[in-house]
Each structure stands twice: as C-alpha cells, then as structure tokens.
Length: 178
Image (cartoon, rainbow, N blue to C red; front, side):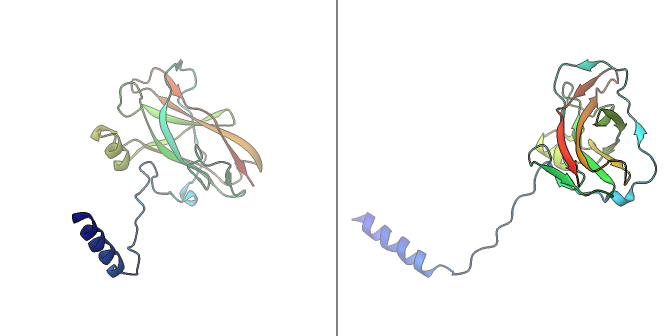
C-alpha cells in the first residue's frame, strides 16, 4: 500500500512545481580558449622551427580552437573565414610523449611552416588533463590580412618535442577563405 501513497505524493509535488524553467548553464568547452582579436597582429609571421627536424611517429597532442573565424575546425566543418581579414590560428599543444610543454609550435598553412607564439596560459587544459605542468601550452598565430587568397586552404600543426630534436605532426584540416 506504500506505492499508491508514494505515487500520490510525487504527483502532488509535480503539480505544485514552479512553472518557470530553471536557468541552464552550458559548461565551458574544456578546449576552447578565448578568441584573441586578429587585429592585434602586426608584422610578418616568423619562420617555422620544425624545418630540418625529423618527424616522430607518435601523433601530436593538440587542438585548434580557431582557424580564422571558424571555431573548433577539427570537428565543425566546413571551417570558413572571411577574406580580407587577418587569419587567427590558436589552441593548445604539448609534447605527447613526455606530457610536458613543447619546445615550440609551428602551424603549417598550405605547406608552409609558420612559428606560432607559444606559452599562453591555458588553465583549462591543465585542469582537463589533471596536470598543472600543462598550464602554459596555448599557441597563437595570426597571418596578416591579405596573406591568404580566397578559396580552399589546409592547415596542420607541428608540435616540436620538448627536447627540440624532432616534431610530432597533426592531421590536416581544410578551411575556406571567402
């Protein structure tokens, strides 16, 4: 006889509940760093550091937060960005074997390696991997406006091993400048 009474109490509570929905807060994406404004870039990007280094067989441990204006271009395709504007590439990366910050990061766009600024604070990455040593593993590369013609392009990342002796290659992503 307890079941009908429990059912009646549950029905009463359901009918007395508030009509307004509770606010829902979407948890932050653990890999999405803040978008740096591409207009802050000045000067030509640096030459990549990975040229002449051997490639290690292990996959790179990284993510792209942005490819131009496209958020999460590894998973959300097609990645599109506006022509005539600076093109931002940012995210995080670290040495996948030693699980420590890399020696440096190159972003390879259409086969050309560019040195990215590396060491930006990414406490979200350190928290996600439960490794405080991975706090300063953010990278940013901004190609000046007009660097990329309208049309299809590719980008990938090279994570330079923490000892600086080789690099880990990431997969290519396709993006479009329109």
